[in-house]
Image 1 (cartoon, helix red, strand yellow):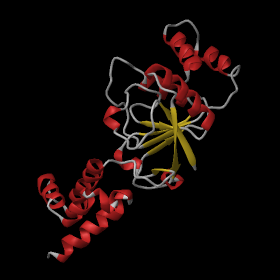
Image 2: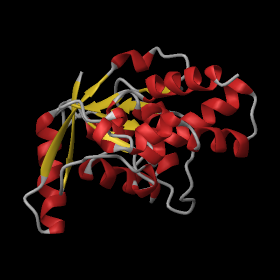
Image 3: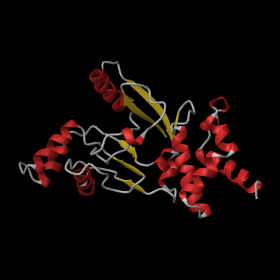
Image 4: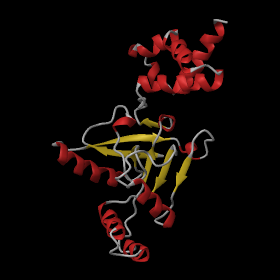
Length: 228
């Protein structure tokens, strides 16, 4: 699936720590399957930052929805479950992440919808009135939120550039070493950063960083096995 992200600049890599908290599905990197929606957001955020705005295109591997290593939540429409989840994540009193999902898909709570959510929270309208008013705005919306480093491996720029930074790849590999080999984090970190695999990864001329991080992990395992 081709998906799009609207911003004030082109996205070369994703740093989840810089993503805003308390959005619809919590802190994460958001894309949509509707280019028009991404263009509208790029125009808005571009004006705020004094640029024309840019839409970055990605390929999303939909196998993520059935990947056992990923925890996924999907909303097909505006319903009670979606409504409760939005309210949970938009609670400004607690900025920490409210869930442990890797990927979340569903409709968008745009400005119109958010104003109605606020009216509900302030007791001005009932839940029933909220959904009744939503039917007056039938234009479809869509978003997918990538909440973890593990989820980002299912997303690549259309030009096949890796969107996970090299240090993020290292974090994923170290976590995998700890899980697969039963190493403590310090030992796993030392093995990775002292390896020839890391040396090749850090040398951007090799473009090893453009490979899926799981392929880099396999190279590291082969290297480690050869040392036994």
